[in-house]
Image (cartoon, rainbow, N blue to C red; front, side, top):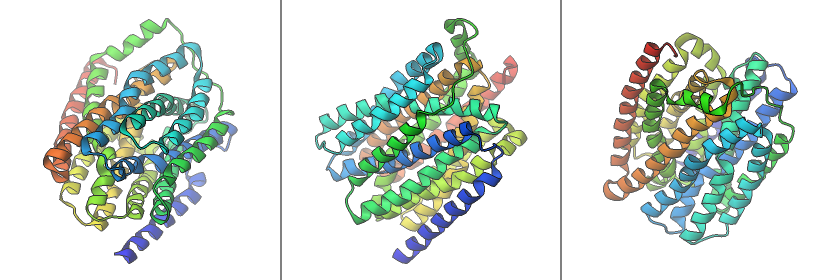
Length: 412
């Protein structure tokens, strides 16, 4: 067992190394300051996330919390994100505060996380988790909207920039998981803070925004209330509930079938490595099947992935099935970001990404975390993943309605 996991770990490290070496040759963007700064911010931010998110619910379990308590704590960040991300995005677009809000968020969120490492009670953890979520909620929408501008100006692709986030996630989950297994679990808090400090320093040199509001904010925001966009966001919500539940309980699932922390980190790392080819070639894929086609792939593969996980009890197979992450999560992110970007004015770039992130990582993830905690306590892990598979299929059907509504309106 240990030999197999060691071989898989070495294979994952080798794949990451080869892909990282080839990225400069494969990506079409020139090595301008804006492009390199964007790559660096994605890399450092996802190094931080990969150090934190895969292990936080496992940390809660080690503290002796119940499934409902873990689900509630996991839901707090998405509750806060749901109520603040759109506000942050609108403020950024209306007053052109993108740079200042992003830098402030990168500075304050690790402070809250370091304080979490010293808390043991549920109420204290809840308050600090809410502070962490408040400060971190604008980060990804602002990064994505900035990356879309940089890619357009440099004749590149969004996926060619976003792929550096996948590299960062893969590296940190693998490394932090191994360190936790050797030392102690609180180590991941300090890894998050260190990588966020690097992201903050890079953000001080981020490129200026180009897009400006060309009409009153109120009239441009009406774009979000078209039927096709609302149906699209509803379909993303359904899929997001399955992703949210899995993010909250995957590490616990792995622990329950006998996987150690190193194997858990390896599973998350392998998932991130599998994203990289899709990110690199996303421009060509979208030219062939469109952002909508990419999203359909995401819905169907997620349904298959959750169904397979519901039957797996071998840690080696559980780690192996994570390769499906590359053709589920990567199409969801790339397809979703571009899909909604194409429907709104450029001047509302941050607001559009905030709306997408609010549904995907906010409202949907919140419902998924709570639903996951309830199903886990009542029916067990296998039943939880089978329900998630059905929900993902329902999202696919709803997305088909969104595509037809968009065609009728002439917008998509």
